[in-house]
Length: 99
View 1 (cartoon, rainbow, N blue to C red):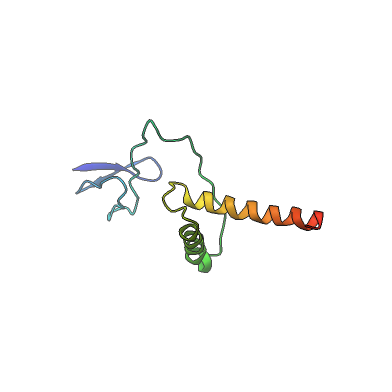
View 2: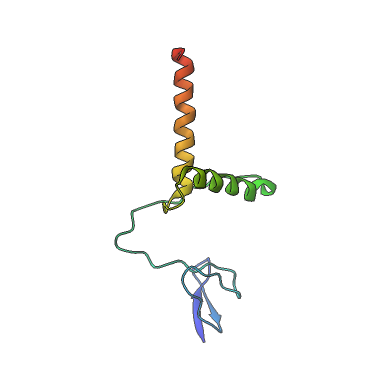
C-alpha cells in the first residue's frame, strides 16, 4: 500500500503510485514535480473568473502566448498577461501625451 498526501496534508492510502505531474484517480490530486535547485523562486498568483468563462479565459491567454511565441516559457501565461498590460499602459501614455 502506498500513501499520498491529500490537499490538507493528511495521508490517503493508494493502491498505485502516481507519477509527478499526473493526477491521482483515487483522490483527484495532481502530484507536483519535485522542485529543482535551478528553479526560480516564485509565488502563486490567483484571481477569480466566472465559472462559465474560466476555460475560455485560459484558452485566450494560451492562444495569445502561442501567437507571440511565448509558449516555450515556463511562465507563459504570466509573461503574456504582463505583455498585454504593458501595451495597455503604453497606449494610455500615448493618449495622455497626444501621441
